[in-house]
Length: 150
Image (cartoon, rainbow, N blue to C red; front, side, top):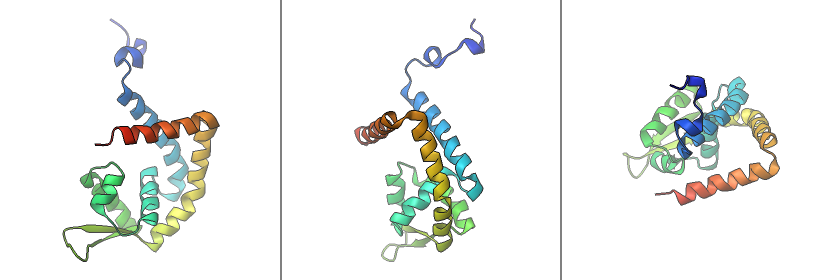
């Protein structure tokens, strides 16, 4: 019987794309979260603030769709951000069942103050991969998202 240390990703789950992507995602998330920690943000929160900066007042369902995220999960993610005063949600003026999400002045200030830390994390990953592989990874991820859209 193989010892735990003898198991490699190839022997445990041969060529599992999902496992590899999730491991890579966790590693990348750790880099961004560490960089953003001094600002009290996770990379998920930083990304949401960025979306709301660009799309202030977007419907919650539309935001979830753009993020390829379940609306319930998005709501749970936004809740602590509302408590921090970074975002606010309001009912749609034409349909009270629809919630619209807004970045607050505090949220915008937090986003802007964290941007240099985010850039540092970006640069760390780009440097680790090299320019060519970094660009290729971005193209591959974009292609993957388009090709697997349902």
